[in-house]
Length: 274
Image (tube, rainbow, N blue to C red; front, side, top):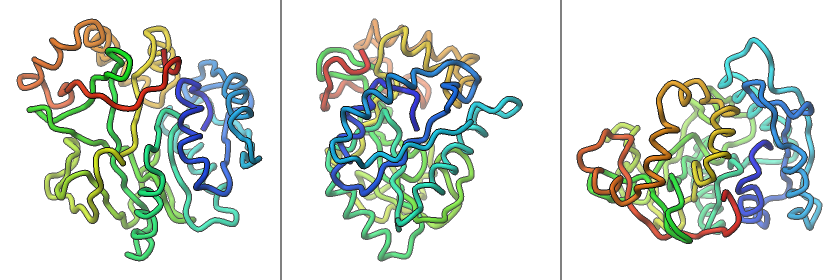
């Protein structure tokens, strides 16, 4: 779904070789789910540079619908794109444009295992990156004592025909992959069953808030979570953490659950999400 150009190029390149077709869903009036303008033309320019084999299938529509909650518009666009991507497919990849897949071969194998297990969706771990501290150095979501904590915003692959409940989430049977034999998502129940374990290096890299202050402010305006972010003070907390990353890490054992961070070295894309 087009709208955020920050890591669009690295994201599409990371899985380009493993897919047959890429459904490019975007609002034809360049309007976000909240009614704010989106840089659609810039996103289209990036895709034209990346799409060397003509895999992109452009599907404009109207998704910034007035009178609907932003998350309702979010879910509506995702479901529309899923239906369009179902043509001639068995499984559909659901990766946002700020998510990069470091080891696509591992991901494909997990889809195969989910298929053999009779699951309808694949929960695959994502490493949530908060801010760039230095080239190749990031604040990353962690446990209270700085172990890796993964996030699962919704299945990253689903069988054709799966209905979405909220954004990428579904109530259909899920095959769960994690980086440890037990759940590493602080937002999920400790009893969550893990079907398969992969290395942390194979987890998706989610460059969620890794961008300039101006770009973060714009993202807050167009996101499906816009209202929550506006009233939570998260933008101010991000600015503080960006300016004082080591202090943020030292405070982690005493911070609320959603403020646990560690310093990590992961793959970087100079010039992206500046």
